Length: 312
Image 1 (cartoon, rainbow, N blue to C red):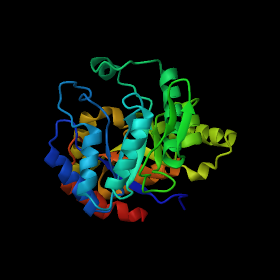
Image 2: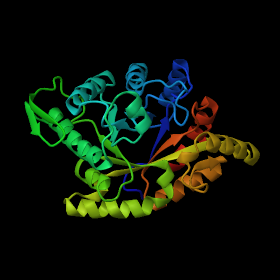
Image 3: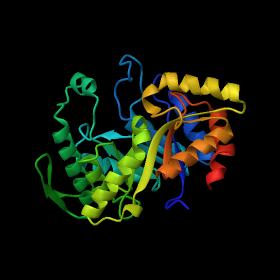
Image 4: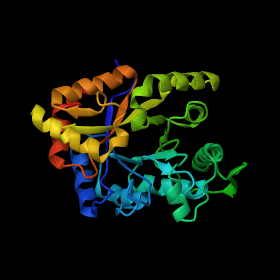
């Protein structure tokens, strides 16, 4: 048996999509048996910087008020875009707006073009990882200590208050996304309830899990308390021909998320079930699925009706 309940999340429309598209997908997921919805934290379309994109924090906050059951998070917030004390306050407020459904997803950032265009300094990866580590320390202090004080190399706070506290106790779950085995997974072991493996590294999941286990041992953390989330592609249809066309379309749209043609959750319902099980056998306990830039509700319904029940 899996050590955690198997959960399924969906990436929201943002790139080249309308607000009405996002509302339709979010409300459909809330109505169906999905566990979570996720927004990206980018200011540009990727890879096309001229493509319109909805800003992730604003989008998710509005959707929190338009949904009632489903959990919400970002995959993932860029550590450089918001001071961690301000982020702690924003997150506590969103936890209230959502009535305790918010997941704080965060990572070290990577899109240099975005940083430069918006006038945000783009430090080395080593510095960005230090920022991530210190930010998570500040977030947890702001949510659980009063007043909170921390002096680090990258950030400091002194006698800071965060009232009201988050709805969730002791605080919203923290998800850290990334693949770096030496430093990032050590940060996961120290701070996170959830680790999200990037889509392109899907095939490397067992190796990454071994590295995370070692870091957990070093910091005296029980590895079993960490949920392993796998980012991946999704496409489903009743017939093999329709499923193949849908799979080809989503792979062409998001080639950097597949991580292996035999691992992306694509195909007929039976084939999708097999691929979910293959990832579970590799160590995944949850999935964040992109059914394309603007998921079709009929596809979401088919997956929820025919695939998710196999794992409940």
